[in-house]
Amino acid sequence: MLEYKEFVKYYDCLYLNKNYKKESKIINQVIKKYKKSKGKRLLDVACGTGNHINFLKKRFNCEGLDLSQELLSVAKIKFPQNNFNLGNMTNFNLCKKFDIMTSLFSGIGYLKTDEELKQTFQNFYYHLNTGGVAIIEPWFSESNHPEDMFHMRTYNGENMKISRITSLKRKKDFTILENHYTIAIKNNGIKKMNDTHELKITSHKRIAKLMCESGFKVKYMKHGLIGRGLLVGIKQ
Ligand SMILES: C[S@@+](CC[C@H](N)C(=O)[O-])C[C@H]1O[C@@H](n2cnc3c(N)ncnc32)[C@H](O)[C@@H]1O
Image 1 (cartoon, helix red, strand yellow):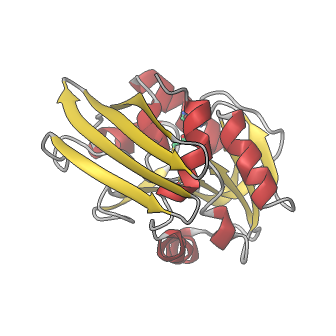
Image 2: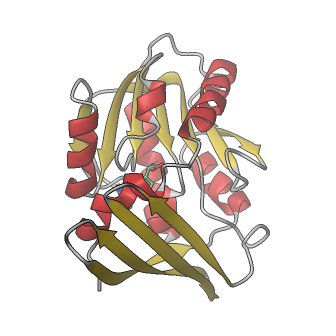
């Protein structure tokens, strides 16, 4: 079983073709449309290796937060000017307020219960200035969840080649993602590894309701950044 720690080394290679620039442009437009507070402080929650911060930091004073020390250490090396905090989105307290909070690429899908989602949205609300916005890219819901399938990503570097085949299966209210990696490193042979991720399938209507109950006025964009939808919570 491949530890998340090990996967971290390959994260950026595998997502080299993910269009973080285009996604950040859409985030910018959403901020422009809905944010009413004056400030420019942005916290990216479940920031991973900071790939959205790379583009958002041009306009905003960005910080990141994640549960994975390993992903954060990659982010810190890439963006030494920015602050990265270790924390759980359900209960962190940074003792300061932000104008924008983002949680992208389905980070909230890792929360297993409605209670955890609610705690997270209450925490987002608490950390926002009045007029600030929370922008949340959820995991798939019932209505847009793909059929069981295989998916493949590859990286073809000069000194390293990676293939990752993912089996995506639905099991009741969860998506089970089983990743099978083959990694070839120059002068170091080939290794094979795997890991499993479980993401909770919650309807976007339900997520919007939990955000409303936490105090937000909520707007929903059906397509969002990459077809998974986008929820915008406004702290009035
Ligand atoms: C698919 S990655 C997305 C990373 C990044 N946002 C991106 O777009 O590349 C999901 C992230 O959620 C983080 N995560 C999962 N559960 C978390 C929690 N309870 N609190 C904070 N981060 C969490 C993981 O460590 C991982 O970095």
